[in-house]
Length: 168
Image: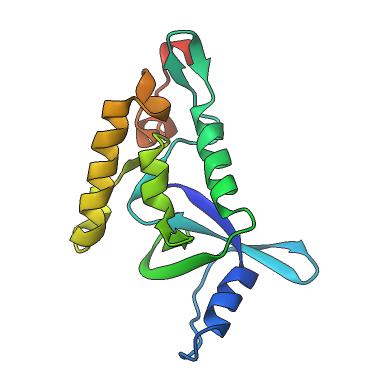
């Protein structure tokens, strides 16, 4: 849930325009990208990705696992249609959403790539999502994907000031 997927309201408007359902509104902090484009950050439901400046450790030393997580999400979203399903919750003043790109859950993809961990406490009422997230996490660790190839800190612990030895 901690990972930010920067998406413009234009994408949300296109998704809403494709459906004749009544318009959805939500409150969020937004920023102007230019005069007629506004962006809102969404938190991914049930996912905590490595923070942009967070480092992880492999045998050769520290590497930028947080930047890798950001790049992975950016590449997954680039030039693709994203479906954004808003949830009733918010986190850090941002709406929480399930983001699907080309029919694939972005949160699950982040976990499977070893660049995020599942936050199953936010998925208690969504077993259809919690099980695949946990399975993706178990498989990513077994394959030593991404950060799981070495030493890493839970992103929440990193946000609270803990650091790996190689980061000090």
